Image 1 (cartoon, one colour):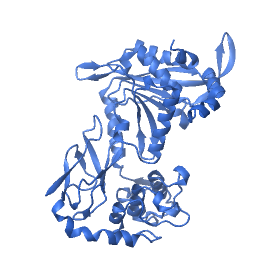
Image 2 (cartoon, one colour):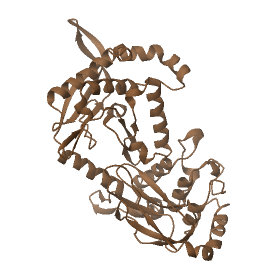
Image 3 (cartoon, helix red, strand yellow):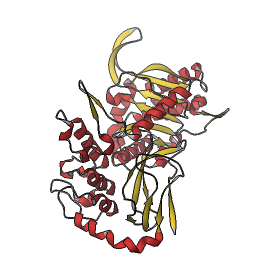
Image 4 (tube, rainbow, N blue to C red):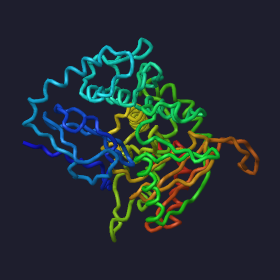
Length: 427
């Protein structure tokens, strides 16, 4: 019996994905729940596992774009017994090694469970603490994990740490390109030197998808941006006054993002068109607020969604953000975490941005851009005073939202942040 391997749904509005990498070779024996390949979209990377034991037949090569539901291979469940003995041997052979494994080791690493004793020098964390995705990536790219600095809990190495290590290896060569081992840069990383200090390097599949999606957003919406500035004095004073008690009571820090989420929810209730989007010839309104928080990751921008933020308090919002940051750092973000957003907040201030124009996240009709807090002279009661100010930007789809509504929405956000007590009192 041959079981078809199909491309799973990877989220709303996503019709295709890139088959980035096979972890098993054509004709190899696979086990149920063993990772077979990785899909990449503009939103997330997804590992697809085998649904049964058997022999793999690959129909689609790495790097190809595939439609959702397309068949990329089959598993011959009748051929299970013939190849069953092949798996334990390579895995065991790789177990004690302290140097990068041989060429066939990626398949063994893909099959290995966390308890396998795969290569780590004494300087690296214990191998059983490393996720299978980290071990597979290290084996495939021939990375010595003792050279990688871990940023995960307890210094654990994450997949992102390995990717950053590889990127640093690519960027390093002031020396000739041949000085960098091909295995360290990956298949798609080969850059051609064109002279005069110019290098040409292919875009990664996920970067191509992000570029296409951003271009689609600018071409298919009537995007406009309005700006304002917020005096953050009272919000900062409130946070400073209660942050220690907040931490003790709720076990999570009090940041400014929860203030902006609460203020956005308040404003969206007053201006529901910004929480809506166009669906064909209709406008679809939402009686709930699913707020997306744009977060930069090693592989690009992702926007996890805080569902029903309108029902949450400050502590619940902060906890949701902390949970998502941990998932992103450890590459555990799921497709369900990215779906269903009705409005997005992007914080360029963490990178030092003073002012920018955020791009809409289709099919949404609004996105709020936060920026750095900077002390500036402002006029208050006819007096020039120094206040911590933040520029904010609201980009909106003019097909759905009129200028009056957009300006009013941003003004309401400003009012909530400058008088944060009103968010607690809901006035």
